Each structure stands twice: as structure tokens, then as C-alpha cells.
Image 1 (tube, rainbow, N blue to C red):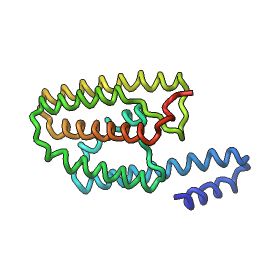
Image 2 (image 1 turned 30 degrees about the horizontal axis):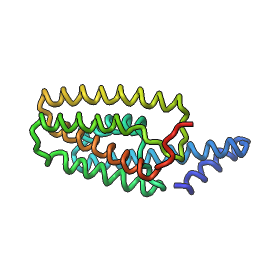
Image 3 (image 1 turned 90 degrees about the vertical axis):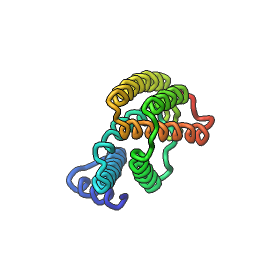
Length: 193
């Protein structure tokens, strides 16, 4: 990934005069875009192969805003992140149609997980310092996201959409586990500046 990023950066540098700071910022942006693109392409390919596109898109609609505002564990390298992301997506898709709980119990588990996430989050990563103001915004947005997810869970329960309820429950479990691991790994780094 880094080699491709450097080739793109060299092509841009030949056409434009960039300061070292501009090159660093551009390199970060290019590498991030490449990594995200590869993750999206691999995830979409996996969902297509499994025939689970709707469930996968629902997973991402829940997971991305939750993770953005709750924090938690982050892999040390892109390769680890890529592997963990694909494996967790695969497992959630594999188990979402195998769980056979009554929808009321599933809804109860979802509400319990949302409560645990609300109590635990946000979990800060020392690689990304957060100001007190930003921390407050994360917390406020997270509460709104959790309310929307609770409303979605009620709608899914009313319409007896068990597979999507299971996707939601497993996604919340994944986020909560990530928060707990992050709390343990980043102990002592949980105060905003």
C-alpha cells in the first residue's frame, strides 16, 4: 500500500511544487483513501459472494457511526485491521441467520448492549488525542445514534425481521467488545485534553 501511495505522490510532486508538510498531509490522505477503498472493495466482494448484501449494508449503517463516536480498540497495523474487519464481517454474516432467539429477547439484549455501550463509551485512543469539547460532542452524538438504533430495533421487532435484528445484536456485541478491549489496552489514556 505504501509503495502505491509513494508512486501516486511522486506523480503529483512532478507536476506541483509541494512543501514537505504538504507532501506528508497528501501522503496520509492518499494512503488512507487507498486503505479504505481496499477495505470497501473486499467487504463488498465478500457480501456479494455470500449473497448477504442487504445485511452487510445494514451492518455498516450501524457499525460505522457507532465506531466513529464510541472509539475502542484499533489494530496496530493496516494488515491486522483489514483481517480483523473481514473476519468479523464474515462471522456476523454467518451467524446472523443461525441465531434463533424470540424477537422480544433479542430486543432486550440489544437494549442491554446499547446501555453498556452508552456507559462505557467513548473509549479514547492515545494515537488520536481528543479535546474536552470534542469528547462532549462524541458523547452527545453517540446518545443520538443509540436512540436511533433503539428505534430501528423496535421497528425490526414489530416486523419480525429476525436476521436484521441478529445483525444488529451481533454488531452491538462487536462494538462493546471493542470498547472493553480498548479500555484495557489504553488504560490511563482516557482523559480528554
